[in-house]
Image (cartoon, rainbow, N blue to C red; front, top):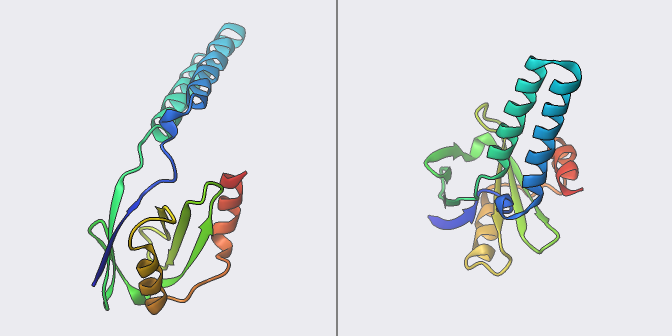
Length: 152
C-alpha cells in the first residue's frame, strides 16, 4: 500500500488580481446592458454568472490523499478499481509543477487530476507505483483540447 498527498488544483487563483478584474468587468457590462437596453433579465443573468465564476475561480486548492494498493486507487474516500482505469499521463507545467491525469471509465468522473511539486517527497515512488498498475499514455486525446485551452 502506498500513500501520498497531492493538490487538487494547480494554483490558488484568489491571490491574483485578475480575478477581481473579471468580477468588475462582468458587473460593469451587466450594468451597462441594463442602462442601454433596459434588460433586467440579461443584467440579472450576467451578475449571477459573474458571481458564480468568481466563486469557482477563488476556491483554494486542497490536499488530496491518494492510496494505491493491489485492488485500486483511493482518492479522498473515492475508490476506483484498476480495471476501471485506462491509463495515466504526466505533464510538466510552466513553473515545473507536475500534473498527473488518470483516465477512467467510470461515469462519475472520467479524469482525475493531481498536482505535485517535482521536489515533493514520495513523488518518484508514486510514479513507479502508478506505472506498475496502469500503462503510461503519451497522449490522452480527450484531455488534450481542454488542457491546451487551459495552458494558453
